[in-house]
Image 1: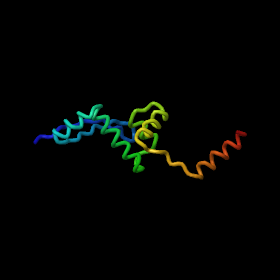
Image 2 (image 1 turned 90 degrees about the vertical axis):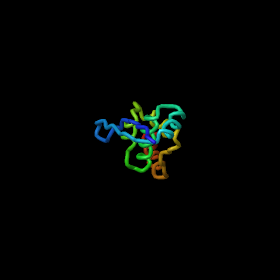
Image 3 (image 1 turned 60 degrees about the vertical axis):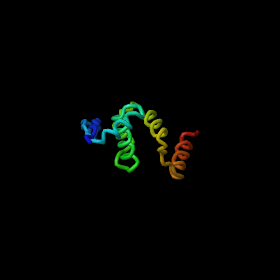
Length: 104
């Protein structure tokens, strides 16, 4: 059986575009396309999100790779995919100290 070819544009770390071709079985391609949405975009988002969660992409790099204009858009994307920002007691203490210095 001949597979389908999926082309996606990935934005590498230094700003140049790279085309990535993934070959998948035709029946799987039909099934994935039937789920709706732009399959190339879904693959890019899945790959970039996985790289971010594994620590191989920073938040600014993820934002750039996905083409979000603002950090707010990226935060919405992360929330939609249930990726929560790590926030510990030391972060809270730093924010409290900053607010105290500002008199707030």
